[in-house]
Structure formats: structure tokens, C-alpha cells
Amino acid sequence: MELRRVDDAAALAMAAAGLVVDAVQARPDAVLLAATGETPMGCYAELARRAFDSSRVRVAQLDEYTGVTEVDPRSLYGWMRRSLCDPLGIDEDRIIRLRPDADEASACRAYEVAVAAAGGIDLAILGLGPNGHLGFNEPPTDVDAPTREVALTASSIESNGRYFAEAVPERARTAGMNLILAARRVVLLVSGSRKADILRRVLQAEPTPWLPASWLHQHPDAIVLADAAALGDATHS
Ligand code: F6R
Image (cartoon, rainbow, N blue to C red; front, top):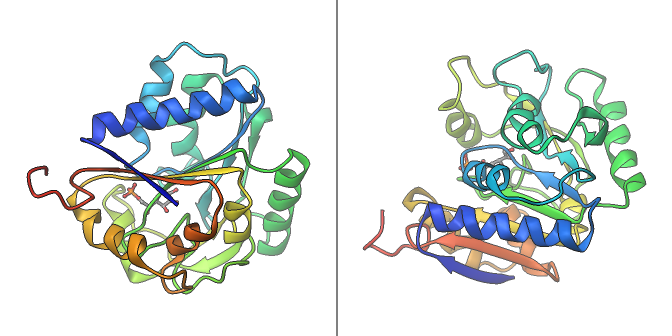
């Protein structure tokens, strides 16, 4: 796991966008695994401003609330489309969905089959949950946990509740830890002082199911891109 430090959220967005563009320049039809949440939004906005060829890029959804269809304001698919796919002109036929409505087994299986058929993930763009989750791989998550439906922890429900007027669902589907760890490169974006404690724990931890992001220590090309506030620099907020 390689730690790259940047000054602030704006610098984080620029650096993260640079990694995405690198991946696409190396492979024009790269498959990006894309988080929603607050942290990657600056990166996605920066990508929309950059001149690069996204005409063949493919995107796989990282997670979705169970039963929440795309017309619902809480839909993570809808959020991903508005923030990343639509600005880059990535249409539905280049998006691998993790469906919220089909039964769990077939939705998760169809997703895993589609990711494998696409050749796997080139770059996973992830945020860090307040409990150390990646996607909705909540603690405890084994290193080989597959794509599946999970019960969200109270911490995740509370954290994600700030984005929506409606109550956050208590169940979600997530790309498996196996699939995240099989990505050719992972970039974990961490910004702001509210992430300082959990980031310190992740950086110091031995890999453990109780801190899912700690599995990234076992990944051969995982980059943690963190700003000064997330790294606990008291001079930044
Ligand atoms: C979102 C997701 C979550 C978030 C994490 C951090 O698709 O999978 O794991 O990345 O909860 O969220 P923010 O960036 O809002 O702090």
C-alpha cells in the first residue's frame, strides 16, 4: 500500500483524476469501479473538465441499496450516472450495474459474470467508510468475500443519511472484497479531518476482517491518496 499525501481536497481531486486519465490512456476501454459518496465527487468533476478520450471507458457500479431503483433520489446508480457517467458520455451499454431489484443471488451473480466478461477491473476508485468499509463491505468482511447483499451497520446508515432526506435503507449490495482486491490498481481517496482516526487505524493495521480497508495492505498496487486533514495535520481542516 502506497501512501500519497496531498494538501487538500482540491489537490486530491486533481491527483485522483490524473490516475484515472493514466488508466484510460494505458487502456482506452478501461473498466473503472466507481464509488459514490462525497469524496470522489471532486475527482469526477475534474474528469469532466479534462480533455481525454472517454469514448470507450467502461464503469462498474460499486454498490447499491437493496430495493432502491434509479428513480429514487437515494439510488447510488443514479448518483454515479449524474456525477461520472453522464458528464463523460458513458452510456448504459458501458455500465455494469449491480441491480437492486432482482433477487440477491441472480443480481450478484450477473454482476460478477459481467465484470469477469469485461476482463476485470482496471482501476477501483474507492472512498473510506467511517468504520473502515470499502463499498459496503462492512466489518467483519473476509478477504475473499464475494459480491453479496449485506446488512448495513449503524455507522454506515448514519454516515450516508446525511445525503438524503429519506431514510437510508438498511440493506445494500456491494462488489465483493474479492473483486476489489483483484482490481489491477486501487486508489483509496481520503479527505477531511473526520477521516483522520479511521485512516490512521487503516494505515497501521495488520489486515483484519474487522477493518475491511486494511485488506488493501495485501494488494500489489493500492494507492492511498489522502489530504493533510485526513492525515491528521492539525494545520489543515
Ligand atoms: C459509496 C461507497 C462508500 C463510500 C464511503 C465514504 O459508493 O461505497 O463506501 O465510499 O462510505 O463515503 P464519503 O466519501 O461520503 O465519506
